[in-house]
Amino acid sequence: MNQIECLGRKINVDDNGYLLDADDWNDDVARALAAQEGVELNAADIDIIRFMRDYYYKYGSFPMLSVVCRNVNKPGDCVNEEFVDPLKAWKIAGLPEPAGEAVSYLQRPV
Image (cartoon, rainbow, N blue to C red):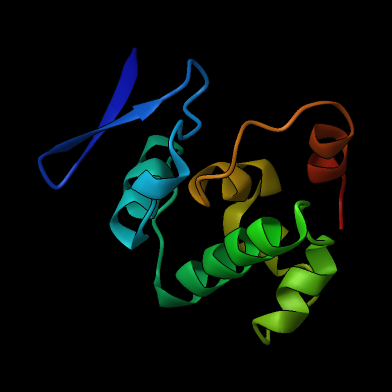
């Protein structure tokens, strides 16, 4: 089983680095996942990640990327700008590994 370390604690991830247990997620785990992706998070980035995560668990789907930006008071392309790759933001948010259409959507330009 693959793991990342966060503040001395081992967190289980799948073969592609996606969090296996949603309850393991917190801001520190987000930073550890981000580090695995070569992304350093600041406070504004954490706001974006929290919104994505909350939306996903409230509605069962990923929000349109422009909605993410609008809801954290950022420009419409903030996810691409902040993370380069929205798929990385999905992973950092601790969401389950996406498939099919979700991957295609996350890889398209905003």
